[in-house]
Length: 317
Image 1: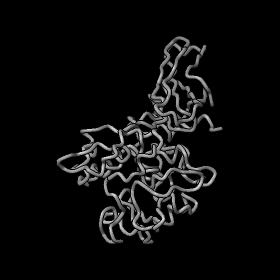
Image 2 (image 1 turned 120 degrees about the vertical axis):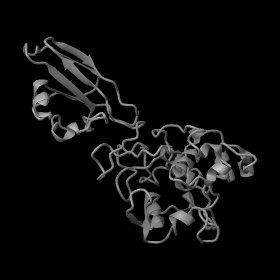
Image 3 (image 1 turned 180 degrees about the horizontal axis):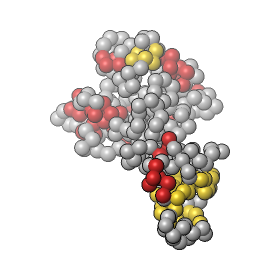
């Protein structure tokens, strides 16, 4: 674990070289300016330094060394509560993404490295057209390396130095909204695949959900002229809630209207992955059943029209 504090070269070693438009600052600007505009959602987030101070309860040495400047991307003094000295990589990297080599400073175009903690961040930049890191880090190119999924916890999420940093996010899938500090509430693309954590219909026009975090059960079950015993699949992410809802309706209703407004709540806040219905449909109709993770979408992500607009049964706890 301590190897990451030896000063690995991950993208750039420092945020900037001399408080000038170099390294990360060349694109992201002055960290202390009050007019930062996100390259993801186009919104003004104001002062990035103050934003991070709020996340870290003004514990400067989570990110800084004793000299405060320059800011190293991968090493700091470590903060209160024995939080590790990982600096930026504490929240923006994952140790599970690969080996950390002590000689990583020796990465060159002739001797490229695969260096785990920053792989996903580099791939996020690579997909955005910033490919400079790939000259030394082969894992910057998604064709060469697959980072661990979105649900893998960054180190500071795992060990935030409690109780000193209660605002550090706990869930990389953002089911609890803990990654929403500014701009559109879509969380962070922790695995660098270009998908954010917003669920369908949330965050204005964002309509993608990282599949590693999708709290969708993807089950539509039909029953025609017989009683029904059925099961559904759990969501992909361990970060999702463990309660499930099931809606029931007559097949003739969505066939006639294209909507699910006549559905009823068959099971609410259920804890297992199965249900049974002894009722028998009429000879000219059938039943449909839809399941979802409690409080999430009734959609599977493939619908041309969201079911959520008409399917409003089953209340949240």
